[in-house]
Amino acid sequence: MIAQPADQYQDIRDAVRALCAQFPDDYHRRVDEQRAYPEEFVEALTRAGWMAALIPEEYGGSGLGLAEASVIMEEINRSGGNSGACHGQMYNMNTLVRHGSEEQRRTYLPKIASGELRLQSMAVTEPTTGTDTTQLRTTAVRKGDRYVINGQKVWISRVQHSDLMILLARTTPLSEVRKKSEGLSIFLVDVKEAVKGGMTVRPIPNMVNHETNELFFDNLEIPADSLIGEEGKGFRYILTGLNAERTLIAAECIGDGYWFIDRVTKYTSERTVFGRPIGQNQGVQFPIAESFIEIEAANLMRWEACRLYDARQDCGAQANMAKYLAAKASWEAANACLQFHGGFGFAAEYDVERKFRETRLYQVAPISTNLILSYVAEHVLGLPRSF
Ligand SMILES: Cc1cc2nc3c(=O)[nH]c(=O)nc-3n(C[C@H](O)[C@H](O)[C@H](O)COP(=O)(O)OP(=O)(O)OC[C@H]3O[C@@H](n4cnc5c(N)ncnc54)[C@H](O)[C@@H]3O)c2cc1C
Image (cartoon, rainbow, N blue to C red):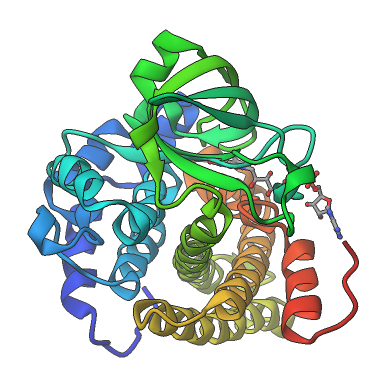
């Protein structure tokens, strides 16, 4: 492993590394081959309290910040695992902690902290409107003490492994709001009850072992007190969760990046062709060094995003930039790692092809690189709006 200076999170790193060491490469490889959910791994993380990192102590969690949560995610990916199986619990948690009512917090957080309930899913994306979130068509109409949900979502992760799901739906028609971001609301949905009452789940097999689903809502009735925060302000609330999500994904990409650098430096130092280690050639060294430099730089932006988020300051720009830089750096490290393993990079037993597929996702989801560039161009630099 590349030697790095100890940081203030070394205790967390050491503890998460020790847990991850119980789940070596062949465990994650087998789960990937079987397209299974790493149930034992997520269970071990939950039992050790890591999945409750962001839950305040008064509700049974450890009351840590996003910085510490990001270290947990980074270490999972750095160990060869994939935080995609469980990261939803981290970023969804803050939406509930920051915007949920005291009653919602008291009802759900202790059970999530103990592992009795999982809050792994967040349903935002829709098939017809994609990244253009404010145009989404799923509606929630208030009827007495219920909301009636109709519509469709796509790519929703971990529904089969979650008890609760955060759902974004339109409560006021677009034609009746001043700004398109108004009139959207978020709800905490009981997944099992929803399946009985009008939500159909259709799995979407995909390139990585990341469980995704299409959801269809047909007059699903949920209790009115499922609403999180105030009606109509859901878009603003969801952005808090998305900034946490982007920062955590940045940390995961950084973990992936270090994993690729560890593997490729070891392999190219040992593999001998033309009578010398291939890593002695500058044509091999430079792409590895370049991607390492980019990972280190992305890491600085990740800490800045964490600092602002934990101080409850606006971190939209930093969270987006951290995710952009880290996803790009891990992808470049992945390319170098695959390339310099030669044919062996394609062999499942080396795990490089699996991690290569896994880290590629982050160029597209949870937000594509183009949309980050657009955000920075228009919201940070003030260039004319393109949409
Ligand atoms: C494995 C996986 C897991 C996911 N999990 C979840 C989940 O749990 N919950 C959830 O809500 N969603 C989830 N998603 C959805 C994900 O967030 C979206 O796929 C992503 O935001 C892109 O949206 P889209 O697929 O509709 O692409 P589109 O919006 O159709 O865009 C396609 C591509 O076009 C380009 N593009 C689009 N508009 C512009 C523009 N204005 N300027 C420049 N380029 C543009 C971008 O490059 C983009 O990648 C997941 C997706 C995947 C693949």
